[in-house]
Image (cartoon, rainbow, N blue to C red; front, side, top):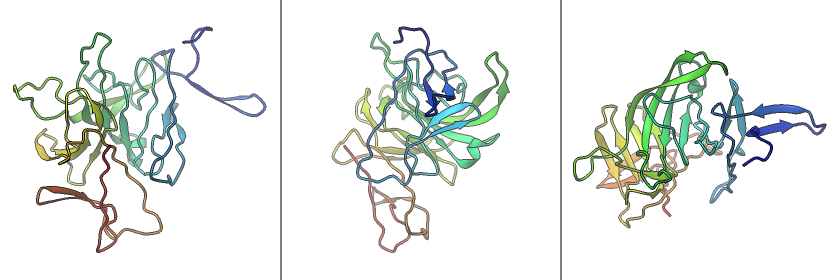
Length: 266
């Protein structure tokens, strides 16, 4: 809400007043909000940070992991590492993008969790979903070269009771999406739901088949999933999800015979 016309999103200056970095939305958005949150129940290995990669600004939502989540928020929608995801509407509200180290190179991949908001008229704009994307090249433009993300597969929840696929799951925050070693996708649905109670986490195949759906016995409908780096230990096995007698356990420490488990609900 600027009085002097359009302003940059963020600028970095030296103590002498020299402009070192000026970042703006390619969309021309003229209103945005930057938020900073305190860490709860954990001391991050690194502080959140700003990264400038190929003239795209990323905000490290969780700088404590190799697979970081990124978020920049504007009135017209958050900034994204790709110009668009094919045949998908603009992402709004809190979302996360899992970028592996190879995803920062040409031809890399990323896993996107998108939370889509309600319109001003109260109507839904779409469903939350997990999207597996692959960078598929560039297209020239007046403002420079833009990266395009091609959808590999996406999932937005099981069919509704009436059989409809429309607007299945809608969650505004805390969602996440990651790929397993066997190629399936694991989606955490987060909280603040528009469509009623949602599962905690689901695993789906690339064909959209639901392989696993986990829920709280307490009926909790808001949670946050966190991932941290290992400290002072080299794990013997990778962390993993185990389903035993219909109870889901997350291997918080796979380096010991007695493993520690934690999933956090509101």
